[in-house]
Length: 448
Image (cartoon, rainbow, N blue to C red):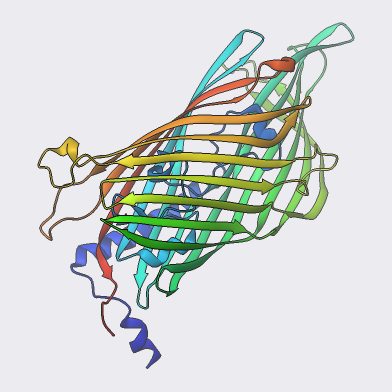
């Protein structure tokens, strides 16, 4: 009997092809989980602190609006797959599949010298499914943080110049499952349970010139991150008349405890002269030790935000974000972190949803965000700010009618850090591309 009741929550597939699409999405998620475990798109010297650069649970739709999330329930008049506030899942009326890529172009500047880098990688794959009784569930995979830094200096030992380098790479990923429900009219609540996994590598290298009489040394500290996270949210939404709607929301996270196992390995190498790139050949692994196996606490987070919208025509809103990293430490004698305080404002506009001209049915997005970082270097508290833009490009109709699917593009033009106190300033362009299939795989039943 319970199985029959569960099946009543779904309307059958409209076509066999949709089943193949869902199975393909699940396969893509599994492959992405395998391939992205060690990837990193960060080129920030400040990613050496904490878990690296935090990626946030944002899709291109909201990144283009400055990172609005807490009060976002609908985007362009359609339910949004808003992972940052799981209370929004109760708005699902159709199954949503969203997958995408992330890329960045970064310029690092210090003392007048500039260095440019670029990279791209898997961004996310997420699925949202409507359930009966005004509920919805979502699951997916996305990056949680990235580490990617590289700095070097020339030093001298016994009148021999050698290069000393600090290199960091790796990342932490997040697989999650969430549920949201609207217990009473106008109010929804929800929660996500996530599993964090990944390895972060910190390398200290010493390289001597060829035939200097010394082996090169590479000391690699590997931080193996594993653990569960829980975040939650609530939204209150109300129709104001004349197609106007108001949503206010709160989201937060528990002071989740995760496991950090650190091992250290020292390797002696020498330069391969037969290689065109001066590759290092391992001679001996002189030590492999367990440095620490400890529990660390993720920050307690609080976010408050609101949106005001008019049908499919426009939406504006703001978010206020707070996270306390004071108790977070993954390495012995690591610099203490502080509090992160941020604000985001933004919105979107659709010129004419009934127009036959394509550019009139595009969602145009604009936003701004400002963060006072939890990282301080040389008594300078870092700031991160960006202007964001985005487009929601609707896809054409199919044999089944309107698909409500789209391609979403966002770009963040930002700056982090400062040139003061001999520090490094980053100027970056973050580009996010997402493919959203919002289709009638499963429909919520309108009756019992």
